[in-house]
Length: 269
Image (cartoon, rainbow, N blue to C red):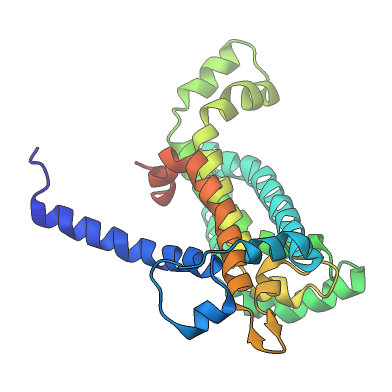
């Protein structure tokens, strides 16, 4: 196999710099004061400061936003994976009446824009007393993450030979014993990728999170849209919040990085 030439390496390096430039600029803004940000253009902060990060950690509005976001993201991810695992196993291992139609119907829910469900969710959760709670956002996001989780997990499960099921049955394992002791450990890569996709959708989604929360459960993505003071936008604090918001996604990507390629191909590579 031929090694990539100099031109290919330059293209990859240039594209990588292009992707990293917004992240670097965000970090540079987070280390500047508002006066430095609006007064002059600096590639490297001449007077770096951690005051913006200190504001994030000392202001309860920002802290509550992070806590609320982590709460509904964790609830959504746990519910989505818990519901999708048995559903994906059924689609992968059994054939039943209407299975392909049901699978397609799950995908159509994922294709619908969130704006379609704003009014029904708002009225329903207001009547049930769930409005302005992390559960409201988590359950609303499940409408989109559960079909995605079923789709990804079904691809990974289909890649596991069915001979494993037969061997476990011959060895005397019941279905729950086989599923939790043998099947799930073999599926840990697929579960990690599913967690990543569910986490990222719920973490960055703004429309439902903004509509279904008020003052108590306001997430960080909503707080970032309301960072306005008497002098205008607080650019430095907003940039610091953006840096901290990127970190959870980076951590999740780091843990599932080896399985992401299979995840983008739905486990069939």
